[in-house]
Length: 303
Image (cartoon, rainbow, N blue to C red; front, side, top):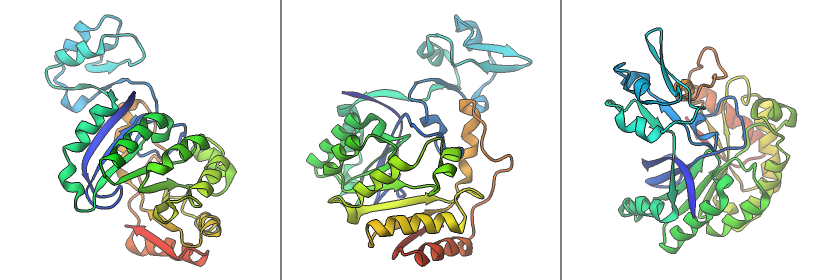
């Protein structure tokens, strides 16, 4: 069994307990306007061009067959939608300015990478599957989780839960921990900013918060200025999840201004013309206070 991944990040401390190896699976059914990993949205593999590495030797322009690269007004322009021998172009680029955005790998190849970090897992770390949406490739994800559990490696998943309920139920037995997003409680706003209804997400959250791992589930909301940061939204989410499971853990994530830099690589426009700053510690505490007022006992604030 093979899957499509776009990154393996080692020594992560933000994707679960301890030091973790985070495997990013490609493809996501959502279209969040603030997506933190825009390179992980499309399931399709494509080339990326890094202008800051390029010396404008035009080797790529002369090597390509169908106009994948062209020189225009002193710049190198990539067209990722034509058929080219991209691996050949990557090989011939002298500065590494061309890369594929992902690779295909087997379960065993992923496990070989995971085992390299096994020494760290003895001190509370483990493996986290992220994305994209890891459950878009749920059978592949399940096999990785299953093998990790077999080798006594702590497992976690980061999911937005806009997936078939059967996919969620298939991986729950192999999870030590789960992080699930609920970004907007209002369905109309969710459709506007995330691209889909939140009804399936809410249904799957209920299943997760009634499952055998409910005490190891953390519901997350990223603080996106002017979109998710209203008192109505935070308290609506808090009331919804605490009504399902009163001991639920709810994490409020600070805005991440670093995502903007990735958008030009995948020919996408970021949602903000002027990139906002991180929220202050005081502002994050205020968001947490709203969640507690609405019934959540266990609020985690990532500042």
